[in-house]
Amino acid sequence: MPRQSRTRLWVLLVLVLVLAVVGPLSYLGWRQSVPRVRLTSEPPKTLGHTTQATLVLEAARGNVTGVEVRVVQGGKTTLAAKADGPLGARAEVPLTIETSALGLREGSATLEVHARDDFWRPLTLDSGPVVAAPVTIDLTPPKLDILSSTRYVSNGGVALVVFRVDGASRSQVSVGTTGFPSFAYGPPERGARVALIALPYDFAAGTPLAIRAEDDAGNVTTRAIPHELKPRKFPVDRIEIRDNFLEAKVPELLPQRNPSQPLVEGFLTINRDQREQAEQEKRRIGAQTSATPLWDGAFVQPRNTKVFSNFAETRTYVYQGREIDRQVHYGYDLASTKQSPIPAANRGAVVFAGPLTIYGNTVVVDHGLGLQTLYAHMSSIDVKVGDTIDKGQTLGRSGTTGLAIGDHLHYETLVSGVSVTPVEWWDAKWIRDRFNLPLKTAGLPEIAGLDAPAAAASEDDAPKPRPRRRR
Ligand SMILES: [Zn+2]
Image (cartoon, rainbow, N blue to C red; front, side):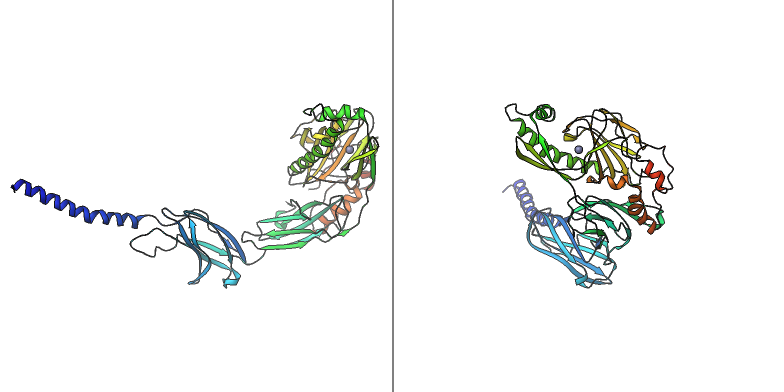
């Protein structure tokens, strides 16, 4: 064999040998270097008695096969929760950590997340936790004290509750399943919160009025709001629906309807669906409220008006001698002369101005703490959203827009979008006893303009210049 060919053979042999060693070695090296499971969600920062957490884990190769949460406290490691089995390349693992059952103490600790995958690596080294983060163990429920509340409450009416909460990240005041917001009130060092709550017209005795406070660790404290229920009865009425009313109103409120559909069917769509839409809109508008009261004194009623219909009147609608529908009327119908000016019942800010289904042209004035007044069926509107309104200021003129029979003002009082009787807020004595008294009991500033009964009574028929507020 020539010398040159021999050299070539040797080079080839060496190359093959090198490849035979380096190839598998670098393959094994690559396998070893593939990253382990990553945690892509935030681990919990606080643990309460029971903490639910969902960990999101991702395997670079293969599948996540197991996860363990360990808590290290005072040099002792406790297994807090685990999940096993093929969990997929990306796993969302819900875990429940029963902190108190594990014998962990309140205070700081370290939370470790350990995870495995099924990707084969030549060496099984303990690579430690995928995450080790500080965690606070908090087993103390929030402190919640009710300082005062309206003693006598009625269905279709309002109550004020004053409370103090400590060590909570959120609190919820509720009437049955309906939640109401609360607001910081008075000197900040007192730490008091107030909430106006509405009892719906059909509030059933025994429905819980409660405050629930929760902290970041999931600890919960609940308190019942003390009260005595004075039930209120509401009237019933029958409304005769005539063809000329349907001919005037159905095309106005249902412009898209099929002309072959009987007008009375269109009326039922309006009376049910549009009424329901308006209810939802009222709840949405009710959330746009000032965190401080904007109003003072009693609320005013428009001058020289006659009450045509009351709050929470159950109306049976009759067409051609047969009952076609039944609905509840959520306001007062006040009528005087046609297109009469509509005064704002109290100081506030306009949060809605425009058409609102069956209500026609509507203005909603926010008075703060969730308290709002609504003015409907207007022929014209003189204000716009964002305007600051004085008590007695003209908002527009009465009319027949929406589902109105004859020119009148439909007036509502709302608390966080729930309709209540306006009667309470027209009455200075009611506001003194049911709103100011709980504030006074809790040592907080009261609403001004309610001191002299004689002066308050005269507000019923004459808008007054803006009184000074004590706060
Ligand atoms: Zn009405």
